[in-house]
Image (cartoon, rainbow, N blue to C red):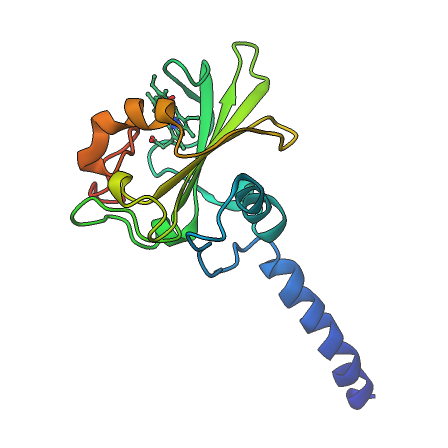
Length: 172
Ligand code: HEC
């Protein structure tokens, strides 16, 4: 009898282990400079690692009021490459960082998804960020090094183009 219980409990434990760890964001090799594109990045934040499982920016959780031009409300998700590095001395996000910003209309409908992803060697002049904008269904609306994104975010070059929060701010 004990043996049967033991035999039965093994798959149960395995099942429990996988069902509990399912939501955990996998540690993935960062997309390389040659590999990164609107398409590979969309796959990375959906199929490879669902961005809605990432952490919110610490201190900036859930739906937040936003500024132009991104929409009236937003939610910002940060992947583990950056989360594990926070607070970053020198204000430079590590290779593999992905920041996903969902942009909502005044009636709180998802309007677009804007993403910044660090790919070592992709764009040395602009701190190696790959920029992308998607429709909610994943259609690519902008990708690569769009001037618009860079010109506006450049105002925060001393914080690695990140606007919403100082990278070196301690995480509570
Ligand atoms: C006119 C200025 C402006 C332009 C153009 C712009 N942004 Fe932003 N962006 C902001 C502001 C301001 C924030 C801070 C959050 C907020 O208030 O919406 C932000 C935040 C973000 C964030 C969250 C990380 C952070 O920096 O705080 C991402 C990701 C992002 N933008 C991506 C993009 C992409 C991709 C483009 C181009 C398609 C773009 N942005 C164009 C102003 C701009």
